[in-house]
Length: 422
Ligand SMILES: Nc1ncnc2c1ncn2[C@@H]1O[C@H](COP(=O)(O)OP(=O)(O)O)[C@@H](O)[C@H]1O
Ligand SMILES: [Mg+2]
Image (cartoon, rainbow, N blue to C red; front, side, top):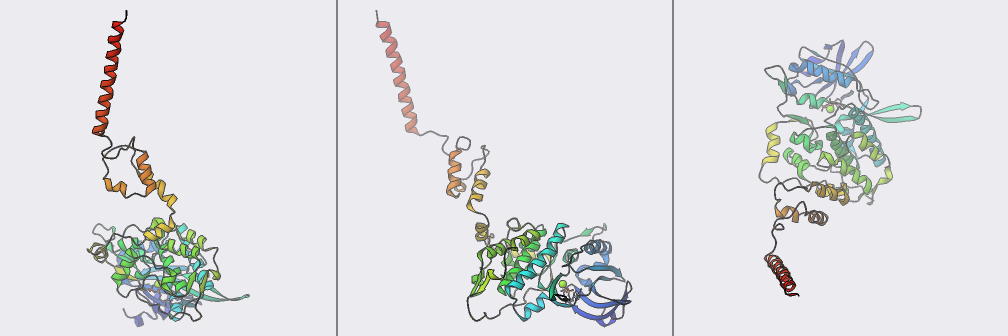
């Protein structure tokens, strides 16, 4: 169906009037119902055989409709009419953060304020266990509102939970929903576990939020490769460049930098547990946390590579981790070292040490432990003898025998002497 044939069409009483824009997941129209004007998003059917998933779609959309927050676009209605799947939203007046960032960088105070609003919204959804899954500047809408205090900028998050719905393939023969492992996401913002297809939770949004904050502060994303496979691999294996490495002359308060790096940890366990915790960690920072030491602003290098939502099939994801040149992830070693102090590591290593002998551990496993752990392993030898320690040395054996013979001789001599006494 062409876009023109959609104009004038009526869906649940909303008449499509004009096209606002389109993206990878659908086309958005301005629509009216009586004197009300709304935005209607028609989902791209090719993405998910959605017509076969009507009930699932309705359930998801209903849940999203309940997500009422000042920083989340309000879903008013939704439906499926003749295979056209649509969502009716409040009509926003403004532009996406992506459109703004394509033109110019954002000053740090405004960047932090936008980020706090984004995390307020995502944190609110996280309380209801709803994951956005596709957080990025194109899904952050900036609305300018006139208020008695002047014009204010308001943030509205778009496309909540849509990626999850679009990731589902089709109905199986038994009529249940199948997920063959394809993923809908945006390569530049995808968390490692989202890429590999390992279980995904609220912390995938924390990672995407980390990329967003990094980008707002550095005017550049942590990884910027044209090739999709390279970009995805970078999320999996490459360390996050420091702000100083990313942008000459950029000085970010080291505590703020630590917050960003924690959000971007490869291992979800090392990240903030949810967007609310990430938001709290940003509370203390204002524009003074970010400085440029050069008089001239750096040349802009922000690209739009990998910023559209895409479908990633299971075989593509497998290829990322199965080729011979792929090393075991070590990119976050540095981050882990920062995130956890050594005191936290010590008890972990020693408490991991077995207290009973099941199997003799390989020698190198202990010699590779940090000194404290080696000490703790050595002090627990009564229950955990290292190999070789159960056998006594031959010199010790000879000494014990000699001592035994001397004792015996002594006792014998004493007995003989006693018999010789009158
Ligand atoms: N509620 C809305 N009000 C006004 N414009 C919107 C609304 N939702 C989306 N848009 C605009 O429609 C276009 C397509 O956006 P979107 O549906 O998010 O694309 P994508 O498929 O890439 O997610 C964008 O320019 C976006 O700004
Ligand atoms: Mg979108």
